[in-house]
Length: 318
Image (cartoon, rainbow, N blue to C red; front, side):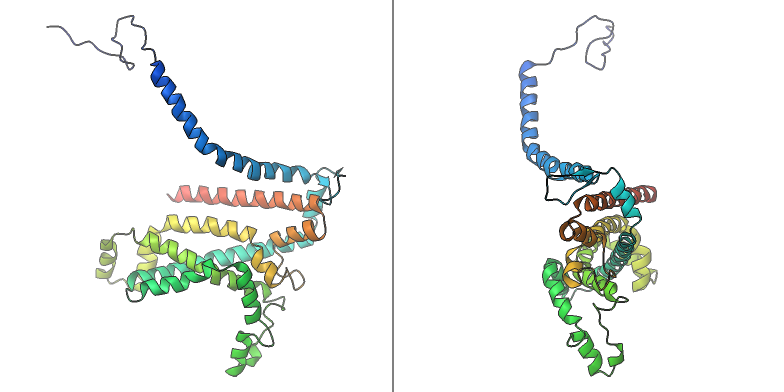
């Protein structure tokens, strides 16, 4: 009985000096054509990213080494003097601190309120669609509209908040919400929370739909209440969503500009000055483009470092 012939990985019989199969020219040509079609679809996006993102990053880093007003053709090379000046600048550290406070509070409070709202809408059926629309509505509003509206709401003399406090006999609690250095930053943080909590709510709500109903039923049988179920059952199953919201919130906090500029322009003093408004002030108003470029480089490094750290932590948690 003839033994079956063993084959190599490429399909050739063992022990025989058979040349490898040559690729079919027609098939090879078709594959190359298919690859070219794929690259043709990808090329516009690649070119766009290279032209408007990576080129902009290197262009900005290049100008951080110069003293330049952004208008004249004359650029004076000063090396790393812009960075040395920045690390000696108390206004930079003040803006960095305000940015950190703004980012930490907005990320945590938005995620917390969004999680609670999402779970409430997930468990309560009546009016679910209506309340989802109500809570999400501020997300679609322009920051310019919100900034202008809250400037009126926060007005010391005729603002709705102070008028309400006076009407109920709590006039002593009335504040100059955007004019007091002690409360102005937190007033702007509340505007941001008002606008973006709906986004966190929707992301959490959609993630909850993927949790099997049996999980909630088991928690109910075990006697877990609303908060125990939320903390011990729901929240652990939404770690991926929380991670995504954290990254988006940190990036949004680092680049926030419009709400702050419309509301206070970084004032009073520099109590609400964040990195983006400080950068804008130095580049556009003071025409110190070289120095502003150095600030932008540091801001990029901070954003990349935080994102890398968050990614490492997420991998360890998984």
